[in-house]
Amino acid sequence: MLVLAFTFFFPSVAKAQTRITSPSPSSLPVATIEPTEASRVDITQKSEEAVGPLEKLIKEQTLSSVWPFNPLKYAIKDAVNSGIPANTIVLLLLLPVVATVIAATRQLIGIRGFGIFLPAALSVTFVAIGPTLGIILFLIIGAISMLVRLITRKLKLRLQYLPKMALILWFVSFGILGVLFISPYANIEGLKNVSIFPVLVLTLLVEDFTKIQLGKSIKTAMGITSQTLLLALLSYLFLTFAPFQKYVLLNPEISLFVTFTIDIILGRYIGLRFMEYKRFRKLISGK
Image 1 (spheres, one colour):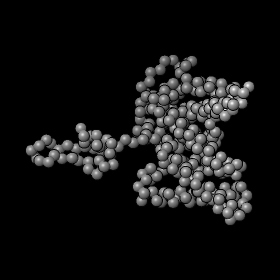
Image 2 (cartoon, rainbow, N blue to C red; image 1 turned 60 degrees about the vertical axis):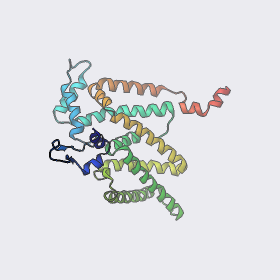
Image 3 (spheres, one colour; image 1 turned 135 degrees about the horizontal axis):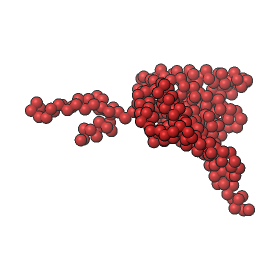
């Protein structure tokens, strides 16, 4: 029992010794313990771990008549039977939910961020490479862009906006290459299989970060960027919550209708946000 607990909590150590034998031939038979490392399921990839359970859910779902409540369920089942990955369908069904969550958080609470698309895309990036590695890469990219801007200002290089952004992208690409070159020596497993998609999304965030720096200040840019990361992490929780994935896949009509209704209600809301109530509480209480 202790060995099993040790293997579960310390899988990296367990890899070094996957076979545990008894001390004497007369004792119990040799016990083989295979290391089981809890891996993160990436629903952005067409793998058996990501697609298999979702396809099984769809194929085992019992449906009544098509109209009026089940047209999407039948369409999803036909699409999966024809070879379209179930994880792609789940992500497309979850993106409107994530966008609604981001809109509600910004509209009602007052958290700032770089629009809606960027936090949503960043959350998908976190699903692909993990939130820890995603935040580290983003901080590296943000630090490079800030450093390049400071250097160009120090050298008094008066560059136009577009060439300056191209120069920043040059340094960012070179910096990410450096991180990839170092990753085998630093034993960073997540970077070995990283694709261009998460790196591209993280790089796109640099342009908005630089725009805020140019228009306001580094402090304001860092504040909005940190709130964007907060929105992305919140969206990441929705994207990776397995019961929620199953619900939107088995009940797409309800999911899309509810998000559509919430978006309309949010669009009609013109009151103060929660953070604005907190900010102007003295003025409001004075009235």
